[in-house]
Amino acid sequence: MNFFNLPSSEKEAVQFLQERGVLPSVRICQNNHLAKLYFGKEIFWKCNVKKCQKRINVRNDNWFAKSRISFTIAVRFIYGWSHEMTSAKWCEQQLGLSLNTVIDWNNYLREVCAMAIENKPQTKIGGPGKIVEIDESLFSKRKNHVGRVLPER
Image (cartoon, rainbow, N blue to C red):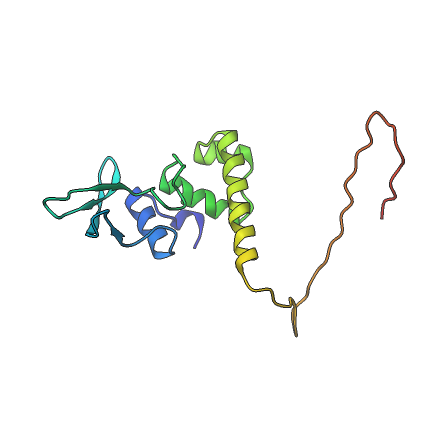
């Protein structure tokens, strides 16, 4: 898959996210009836039982609960993030996102990855035919050129 093959409509984006388990494919209303997904000006789940008719926003109780960006932009951002293409300038020009939105989504995706790693059972890394690289970094800053000079390696 490449950037140009990503979903171009909200309906395609929602289906894309459902196929990958990011959005639910089935929804049950408050009264335990099966709801149907409707696409229009808004995207929502609606119970078709005549006496019920409950509506549920498609963003409720999932990954997009507090997000206001469209699903197509979200899919493109996630794709870009996974390919390290989410500089603020690129996101502003290509996706029409503000700096604050880019920062929030970058942090959010990092948190999702960290949670996924934490929830996975720990196993040894590497193995036959696998190369494991370990990097060590030293970050320090002297204020007003005062303080000891830390060794650089």
